Image 1 (tube, rainbow, N blue to C red):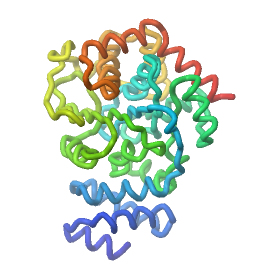
Image 2 (image 1 turned 120 degrees about the horizontal axis):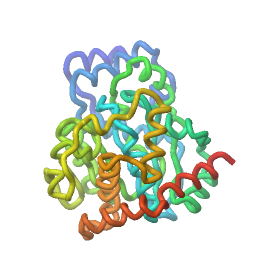
Image 3 (image 1 turned 180 degrees about the horizontal axis):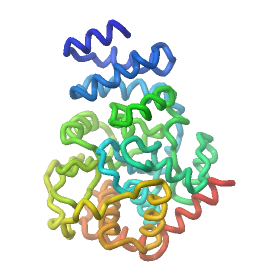
Length: 332
């Protein structure tokens, strides 16, 4: 690691093969905590290269515990985190609304780093039992349209650095990697990223793949479609900047996205929105993100049509029923 660190401290980048090897060694506990912390800190001070990101992704996918959900057309709805905005759990709510609309969701998640409550914190609060048992996950996706893949159970490298990430308390390149390394590698994906530069890197990596994807970055820094201003959208078909008004929404104040000071606060907001009792602002954010997810499946479909589909998932109570069913199956 000393050689690698000196190389990086000289403002050089790693090639794809070396980046992959370093991540493999981290997962095998070949380095001490100080070395790993120094390595992570490099990428807090400079941008990650495409080759480095690809190498890190290759290592995590190769090392992860695979989940075969290829019998289903699944989508992941996952943000990088790390935007330090402390919003309510937008991607998690979006996942349940999309599942309530009849789509199969394989949600990849983890504990929060830069917010008070990540998706795993939330699911744990509701007594959902994390599992990497493929039979259990398949049962959940068949009966509830959704399963939850808690990252540390599938990624040994992530598990190794989890204490260091918590102590640092800021985004690391593992935030960048999360959406790229879902262990079931779903064919559809809505991805929120915390910077425009990273959105472009993702777009570059995913171009040419068989995945149908949409990458979202709100230009004021959110790693999701926040409706607080214009956002950049990358997909297989297009690259464009969109204002909320263009897709039928009014611009929101950042305060309307606040996720609370604790997991309990976040859980209260989550249940309120999912049960159809959220504020108009909260509900609109979820509708916008969920409609983007549905459009991954149906790029030819008008966005307004997708909006109506996901609105009905909330209004009919199906999104909340999906959540209840998953908890029932996940606490057996």
